[in-house]
Amino acid sequence: MDWLDQQQQNFESLQNFGPRLWDGFLLTVQLTLVGAALAFVIAVILGLMGGSPKWWLRTPARIIIEFFRGTSLLVQLFWVYYVLPLFGLTLESAFTVGVIALGLNYGAYGAEAVRASLTSVASGQWEATVALSMSWQHKIRRVIFPQAWALMIPSLANLLVHLMKGSAIVYIVGLNDFNFELDQLRRVTDAWFAYAFVGLIGYFTFALVLTQIMRLLEVRARHRLGQGLSMREILSPAPKLPTGIQPGGAS
Amino acid sequence: MIPVAPFTADPVPEPTGNIWNWDFAIEIFPEILRAFLEVTLLVTVVGTVIAALLGLVIAIMIRVLPRPLAFVLRWAANFIRMTPLVVQLLVLYYGFTWMDPLTIGFIVFGVHYATYMSEVYRAGIDSVPKGQWEATKALSMSAGRTWRRVVIPQALRSTIPSLGNYAISMFKDTPFLFVISVAEMVRVAQTIGAQTFRYTEAITIAGLIFLAASYPTALLINRLEKRLAYAN
Image 1: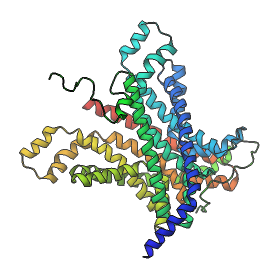
Image 2: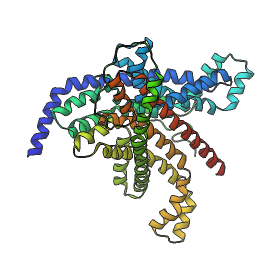
Image 3: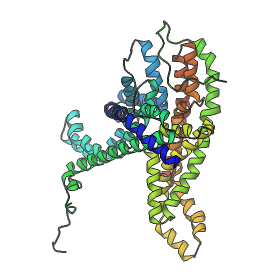
Image 4: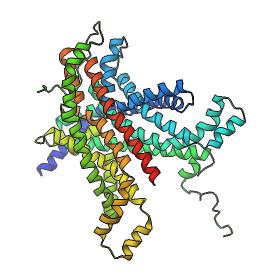
């Protein structure tokens, strides 16, 4: 019965900590989403530069990508936190520090995914844009990127989960995120209850939601290219059969 | 011995005039390099060995166990893979207070990356042609012999580059040991910064050591990957 009493106390503490934990969780969600938005912008810019045939675009992109991929996330976090202020760039909030570090680190990884998917777009597509004498912006926006986008989503989904997991370290520069609040809960309950039961399950649920959203985005991107079912057809309670198979048709 | 600082980063010091001091950088370099060799590399090597072996075990288990058990194991692996390493380190750190933090590092890095590596092995096992399995049946080989002598040797060859890439990721994740007070390279660098109020040199050196170790290794693995693709 001792153990049961302990668990009951733990759940009471969890109830008392509920609002704080929820605020912390929302901060982790914000950190992940804003960090991912910055990472995506950096990934697209660096990816386009890295895939460019012009050496003066490609070389700096490669150096930046390898630099941020090669040095560790925590090093970059400390660099933004301790060293950038010396250059006169004082970041007021720990949130900004975290977003910049996450954005740069995972943006560099994402740039590789963007570059790889741009090169996987069929060469006939690139040639066709030249034959139609499309401007660079026009061809990237209307022809190349929509196709590359469908190809890059699976890698970006992986990176998004990595970024979410990486965001758990940002509390050390003074951010009251989910992990920080778990530490507070741990002090009144125990490590297994706070970290393993509440923490890991909370992060896991968030990761599952993120991967499902990315999966839907992939479905949408593929449907827009004329591949696969539309999002509405997949989400509807009576799913349609894939195109080409007509129910009751001649066999 | 490096004193154990609190688990959160110290506040940012007031900016001073000179940003980079070469004499200071040269002075602290050996200490940071020692932490790299003694802790960071050690955790990476031990973690990789555990992950490579355990990953293979998980991959084979998922294939040979009965359906419900395999399902549970697959989701357990997913659970470990999709939750933060930092939180996993903290669970064991506060949950098993009798355990040495470095040992906790070996276990958490080993198990976390084993779940990644098991996916690599799974793909490798799936790529073994069906005819090979049928041939072992025809020769009435035992299950153990089939795995040991036929499937695993063929499955492993194509997995080596991916395993290497995960070893590099693990290497770059070792600074997370900061949160359980292991004196790995970044923590040593941060402690030097906190004691001297000069962070730039220490943290930059730590970053450059990471880059100097991981970039050439990544290039090597890349070449190996191309060689293997060519050989196949």
